[in-house]
Image (cartoon, rainbow, N blue to C red; front, side, top):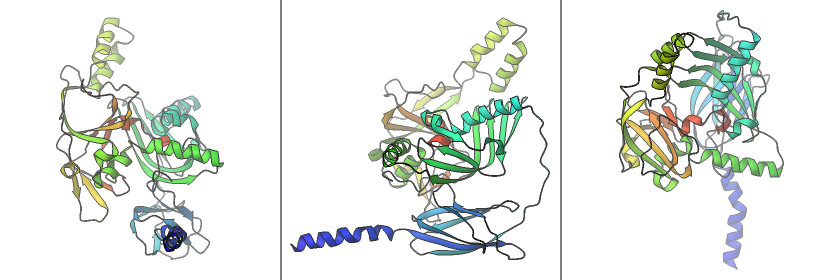
Length: 395
């Protein structure tokens, strides 16, 4: 009987124990010079679900925050964005934030037809929102906030926005507000790079709808970069289904540079059929040669380094990192992603570093700029598959 009563007491207390694991950030946002309060400023934790606006007196409160490191962002029209890294523990944080008035600069005027804008937008949508099944249930509510510019000679699409791009993701149950600082899609280098800040808001839904969203979120999480980096610093790669191998490769000498291939195709397209077919054949050659995956995977300690800053880690490796997720099979064929003949068709990604290491935090978020380059499975994941940093399976 005593055991039953003790269990009952623990059960009743458990919800309060869980609640005690969250924290609060309060503060006030003011004009940098006059110190007058700034109302209606957006205050949020980057890539998380915690966000609010300042009141008339400039005050704000973010509550129910899970412990961890976050980037606190404050943005309001006419002022420079404010960013501060905060370490959230169990003790409330109180901040006084001063914003600097933005120096207005004339933007380069790019004149394009409505048809050109629509064409550029469709490319942007595919490369930023994504093309997976989840993308079909994503709706951009305000696409015209985007500034789109296509450089035909360089085959580069550039984009940015002065206010939040709002995307309603009915696949995962989020409304994502993304403050896009820059986006560059390079068709010659076959790379996409972008940076910005995001706030996630849970969409309202029925109990049945939330059950579906829970399943889809878990599906997006398992095998993702966020899952991998969390498993790495917890030393649970194998347990979570990951293998990380050393990978070496060299550029294929038989394949000319992509820029030259595109120039030749453009030159001969209308004049010489044999020549253009020759350059098309060269373009179909793989980019790499002499590829080799070391069979024995790394242990976490071999590629993980601690840093002087709490909650921040570094990943480092000498060549490329070949990451295999053994709990899912890959359905997409990637021409330039090597796969050993004796390896099952698991999801596979290749990480390339800019420099000797990349930094990430204990939420599994890469904080290095530029971020590592992903090839293979992870290259498919775009905004439609993105989860907030405070997401945990089972949420």
